[in-house]
Picture 1 (cartoon, rainbow, N blue to C red):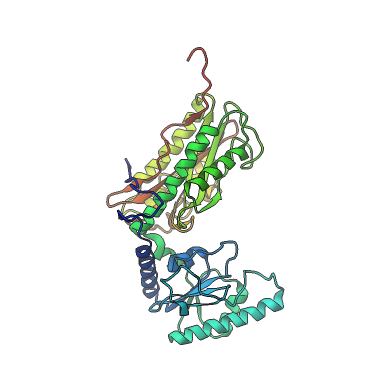
Picture 2 (cartoon, rainbow, N blue to C red; picture 1 turned 180 degrees about the horizontal axis):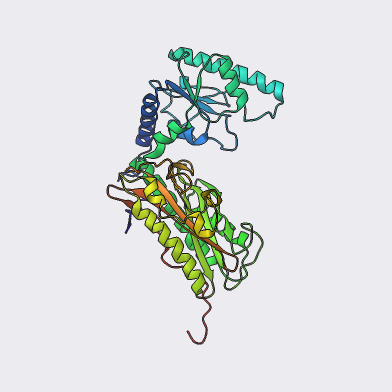
Length: 413
């Protein structure tokens, strides 16, 4: 049986009397892992614009709704060069030398300025990158690239730069977390626990799904969440967070997805029954989810693979489907870090074809669900760290049984 991981013994604030999360060390270790991965795959440099990759390499966050506006060039044996749109040295980042801040010459993805402007900007951007590669002596080497649009990639190729996809390399570098990263992930979960208590207290007959979501958002922000991805709430409606009002007997299912602390994220489901004891059907659905999750968790240990774990998820045939494609995302295990879906991934569709090994320090979310027209959705999820001998659960909200909110007592009770 999986055991609970250690609790954090500190809060989100920095203090001078004890060792907490060491952000400088975390930046250095992440950069070291990126360089090692590039060298392993013989990639001399990489050009990154995906916000999670940029933050991993530089420790700098920028708006995720403007991808490709900022980007970073990293030579495997060089310091990162950070390109920003403002054209000035970013204050508060002394770990990057002033001369390594440069003006970004690209634009946000797509053709918002029209095709001619887009191509002209792309050519200017590519020529600038070629110049920077020459400064490093790498203009004839392969350049790893992650999420740039086609005009940018085409312009780089026209400059004679050989491009290779670097996202798998970055995901491999990011798969095993440092202790500081693990503590950031635990902190994100602790922040969500504040919101779990808030929604538990507010779920009662008459409240609307979207009002529950509003309570969650307020609690998360007060608790110190950096960003909120979304908090889907359903009490039986076909869409999430609607104006449907909760009634006695509803099953309310909530997910805290993409709630971040220092960029490190969560995926954390629970289900509640409103006002009464759960029915035998509801208990059975919950038990199936719980048992599948914990069989998967028990299979996660160094030396085992995602195929060993995926065996315990529900096969598509058990729901009457002809192939596993019908259940994509139904039962799932996925790595967590600066993005929601990192290595390793556990799913029946592909884990048997391409098993990934578990390593100490990996962090995953394990989820399972049951859906019934008469009940609605019951879905559960735990987050775990791979320890020396097995997985350690670091989510604390009760999961063994369905949670009853606003119980309405009768004379017989």
